[in-house]
Length: 264
Image (tube, rainbow, N blue to C red):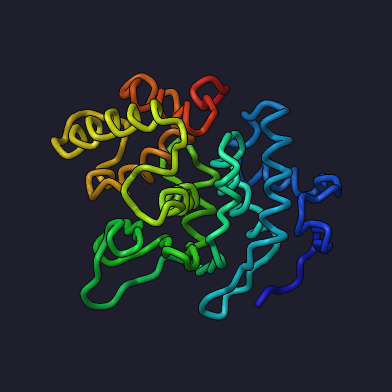
């Protein structure tokens, strides 16, 4: 369960809608400290993000695993990184991860015992080795995250990995009921271009060609999309240079230009 929540305002029922309450300065300060990437956003992008964060925190239930104490600061950091993916989407049907039931936080990476599977077919396991799990997204189920991993990756986005964005990219991918590396795209021309570009880039990764994407993207098409998403937001400038076509379709889908931001 949740422990004491110093420094933060307790959420009111108004937050369950599109909160009209101002975004607390204390939250803004903690985000700047915990997640430096947020300071590269334009004022209008940040305003949209903050509004989504308030809705997310009003709707999504957080649970603690293994006797862990989840603080509101932890919830805030997860919500902010998850909501960045949605901040400029033009598709209203992608309603703030509407299929998501809850977020479960573990204190650290989970060690999997015995035989297990990785990849989108089993729900999208983001395994950072054969035996440890720092995140998992389950269709119509919870997102499971390791706090130690997500806190480190938020502070060091230049490393190009972000387990929150990775797992919530799986949530976007699953919005149409399938984990296939193609999120719901209403624009037919963009969808066709997306499939063409991502198929070519996925083949490049599988061949072992030089790319900004880490090798885990070669697991399957679902993991390709999740890795491409975290790379797009954390190493946008590098992705734009090494895979300009992939950057272009992701820019059109997400409606954002991370490479154009300072620190992107």
